[in-house]
Length: 290
Image (cartoon, rainbow, N blue to C red; front, side, top):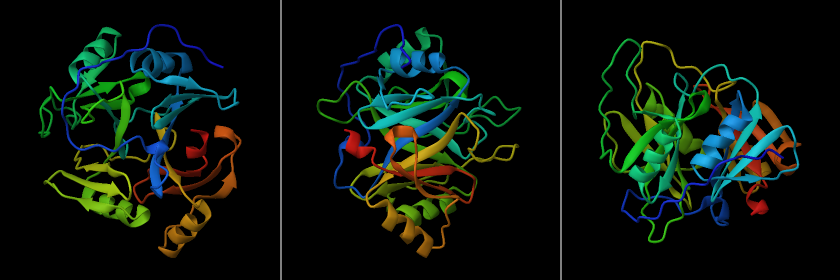
């Protein structure tokens, strides 16, 4: 098992923030939750320094020496040492969102550990000014980890929040409304109020705030996530076989069939790809490991 060096960051000041989901992997009632992110990484040790020593995750043992798994209260980050073809920027997946009690404190720690800050909607190639992003930057920040993995920190709204917990998954696309509607249809999610001319969200049933979609109009054409730093977004599903049948009834075909995987403790898994190239891994069994 891989081991990290350094310390685990903990922050403890309670602030207020937008609504957020409770610890999802411990959510027994929700039919679908976001369960993991699968990363292609140049160096597992470098990523352990970021995810464990800096952000405060812990190493989980799934009995597979080919991967390292980082556990947060309600999400797994799965690391496979395979040089990515590029960062998250330029793909249809923008960033992983976490909630913390004190965004400025943890952001300061992240920068002190040598990681760069970025912005929500990044400037297009050749431009220096970022498009507008609503909100108070004292309440959230954007970070770049190893291999250009983009992470957002938002201020936790819980009364006694943990040091860090998963908050949302954020996609990006010129067709951001159509993308949101596809995810609502695929995962039986519902429209979240508050749509703007560059943002729309969707709530997962039994979870709430989780799926976000930005407009993005760069000069470059966005590509799918296959082979990139964040290669797959994982959704944990109750009764995966029936869920897959439901997807097929909706006209959503599998890119890889339902099967048992040797990774992640031999759980059931199936794979789909959204119309814009985001690879989605559907699993059943991650919740049972809690």
